[in-house]
View 1 (cartoon, rainbow, N blue to C red):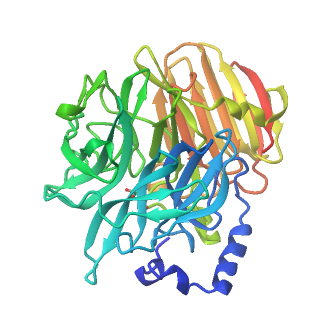
View 2 (cartoon, rainbow, N blue to C red; view 1 turned 90 degrees about the horizontal axis):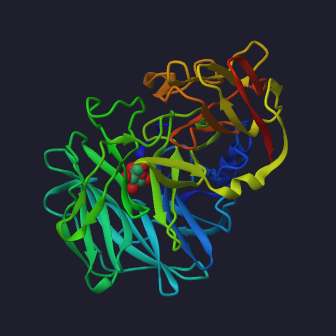
Length: 479
Ligand code: FRU
């Protein structure tokens, strides 16, 4: 939603209780609230931040502007989880309350160091002429959730980057802390800078080099770069804005992509032996995905179900955006797979054989098998007239097509109403999660993923099978 700059950057303290109550009441009126996906209490949720493990729990923050569905003065909101399925907001916030983050506590990462959680993030600072100074800064969070910001800047804007320099990700490689930061050069090409913590002290960072990941610079900015390791193979996840479509076909306003590498050579700032650039998600919205490696070596990722510069039907209820399910990465025969964490199965409260159904509440999981040589056409969020989200899994021609042109309230139609990807012409599995106004579809054990939103009418809660040889199970999910 377009709101004037004065509104978006109005100091938090100036918002009256009455105004805040009005916003909260409006949010509560939405018919589209998710059940088992994390949403903002009020305002806009964008990137996942600080995804990590600390103090016996998983930690996940998110970018938020609390006063409406717009990108305003950003803060981090803290949640924690035991099972990576239930995330509870604790009330802890990283506020834009310091000279180094006066115009927003922008995205970043976190890592447990000693008995504290180190938060590494971008301070968005603007001067009186609205000129931006992007600062990479830090803070400690202790076990009580108290935040103590560093007074020094950890990385200043280098000479060869524009004001677009942000989203530091800290990671440990063989006992040494490194950080990568998204950047734009003066020729308006996106790239990534690699830094290293001097003597492993996160208060001191030195530049190693511009990360060589085989990027072409066809994008004008790389947001939210993340390096995770899957069976020791480096996987770079990133959001290249403006990426040339001759390099990768995508429909969303901005893509979220990855490359798998054979190895990482930090001395030379080089990721070696990369695949082509690949879409992380084939759906209508998944962006700014953040990942980290757990102590036992798992690579976990979570995505913003939303996109910058897109208006959503929920905007009129003063909120926007949701967090995806947490997905675990694996690599099989050189291919990346994403799967919801195992604990998602604990939400299954009843099960029945898959078939036509009125679900009444659009809160379920489907586990399906589509036979080979079959065109399975399903309608989810279906009404009596057969309108809804059309999902076609075609094992005859080898593709999956999602069409939301008849599913609820339309938005972002300039970017197309269908999404598609190819699959092998063989028996195919589909695991589908539906949550009120969200779908996450995992094809072939997570080889291809479609994430997106649908804003259904009150009568759109059915499942219809129009054709195809498709069998499986319907699970009702209870949160
Ligand atoms: C990505 C992004 C980041 C930035 C944050 C601000 O969606 O633009 O690059 O740090 O959002 O909210």
